[in-house]
Amino acid sequence: MRMRVSSGAPWEPVAGYSRAVRVGRRITVAGTTAADESGTVLHPGDPAAQTRVVLEKIRAALHALGADLDHVVRTRMFVTDISRWEEVARIHGEFFAAIRPASTMVEVSRLIDPAMMIEIEADAELDEDAGGEAG
Image 1 (cartoon, rainbow, N blue to C red):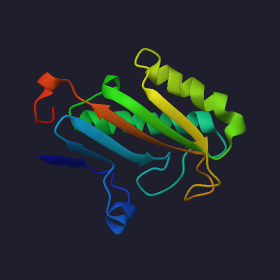
Image 2: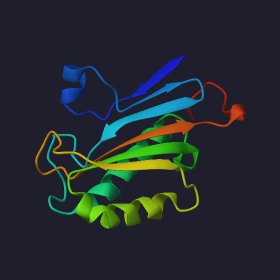
Image 3: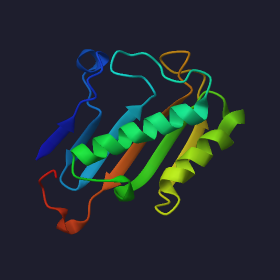
Image 4: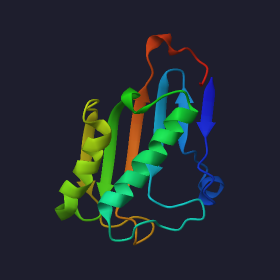
């Protein structure tokens, strides 16, 4: 059984993707940025604030599919300025300090909008007793 969550962003139907997809106990969250529903980038120039927005969006997508951050087993962070890694890492740590998923942070030359400083993907795995229905 496949369940999907949409962010409502205008480019989802154009590009043919979902914010998150759940198949069985596995949830994959697409690359998520600090853009609102209209595509406006929030907090330009502030990677920490953008990271917070992104992780809140990821948490909301997980909730919609019956999961939470404590189900996350992997995150991938794509940053446009690796010299500011610690600002991003501190916010990631606020959300995941007790969970400690496998994580990767790499610098990329740019994201779709020049104001975007970070994009994060997440993979989650529900407990065996979570069943097939979203909560």
